[in-house]
Image (cartoon, rainbow, N blue to C red; front, side, top):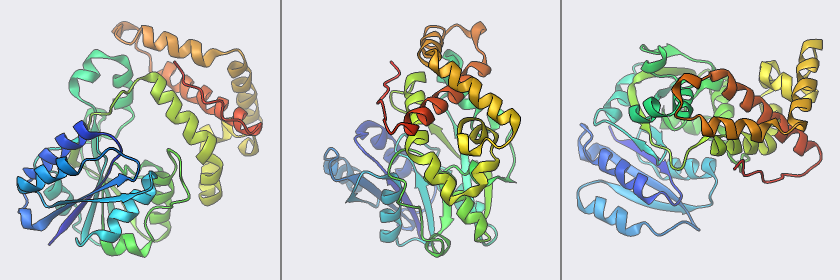
Length: 323
């Protein structure tokens, strides 16, 4: 059985190097493993890096395409020869059991498997931001210690496996999502609609060593995903209208009195500039552990989402840096 690992990348040489090193030592025969790195046409040249890993025994090759995550994943899948596809992000570290854990998780037909994601233990211990971020992942740290079926919007595409025939059956990821966010949720719902069960397994575990992560970067990602992808996602996935946070922030989804009241409050709070004040507070107290409060991060998420909705309504991405 050949397993194909597909890694979209863009200017993350150091992280990619570390991940490829981990993949060289998987406890699966090297002849059964192929790695496809899908890079951006405009990305830095990494041919020497891949050549070095190939010299050291890794079956790895590089594809070039546009810098759209869904396009990269689909391009890698088209070139793959394996019967099982594993999608990994380029800023992960993985144990030598990752691939076999994904293979063994597919013990029945028509399932897609999301593996466990953690942040580095030292990051969680030292910063409130990563303590919160880690609490939002399904992992053994947050009580997800056994295999379960999961909701479609909980699919984790940064550490995901799916049989190649199933991936081709549902036509891969939707490439109409050209900015950050949305394609993973849409993929999960489309799997479910096609009779594919979304599964979480803690055994295929990966550590997320994201580059330059902090609360401001977190806010910018939320803003971009909301500004560019939320309404498009709702058109493709009408189930989004039943999500409370969507009802609270998107005016067309606020059908109940309580949703309208919360929506009005969020608009008013955004108008007072609370987003940037809250980001500054969370940055300054990031290592003050007794001030850790998940509620602050949840409020920030709602406020940034509402800010993006407001800006979208007037057709202007203000390119907030959230510095």
